[in-house]
Image (cartoon, rainbow, N blue to C red; front, side, top):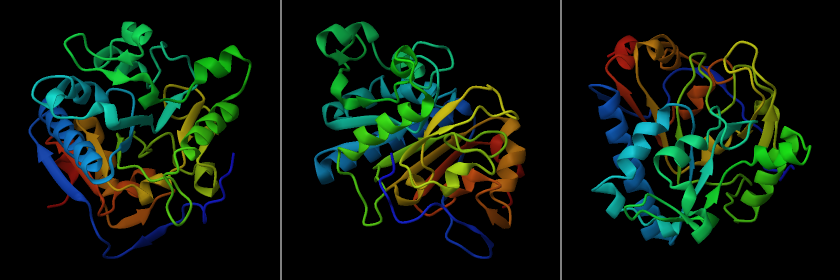
Length: 282
């Protein structure tokens, strides 16, 4: 489904450009806590300003600690979850309960899937989120109906289009997009040289990467959403991320080579632990 926004992502260059906020903390646990506080504040402020918040979260290991802090006191008591809509920036084309699913960490850590019968999901200690506020890609349903990843992406785009969250340029605007980064500099499921950069579809299928595990077909939001998001939060930790972060924050800007540079903009905050930040220039 194409909603005909005004142009795909472009961008190479160098020179002085606005930079994101860079926060360096001691370790992965501190990064998770700092990120959770940022998520809670961004969503709460969006609800106060507009009566509703829409954010896109991520998968893999990045959000697990963040979800744990969001579900614990004091943050669990401050976030107005009834007014918050959760989307996913990308997912693997696997069922929701598959170990590779990007939705599974939220189900396992923040939500009580058993609460679905009551129309809400949440920790048994009191955090409840209306199921109608959760908007994942639905690869499990597509697989069950013998539909492909492109159809799955189109379904999500149609659901997103129905919200009316549009910019003047025709892209959906999220109050917050939470992302991690891959060892090759990918963000969302947009890998170096991806055809997603030339697409005007809000969501699209991505072939299984051959250079990056897991080798599974993906579905992803268009990377252009990072250019119009009200806030972006990037979280990375560990020494394994240091080399690619050195490239991402290096003098050359080329988003097709390092897609995570799409989040190297003044609307973004990067929270890194000391090990991940080791190669950054002072």
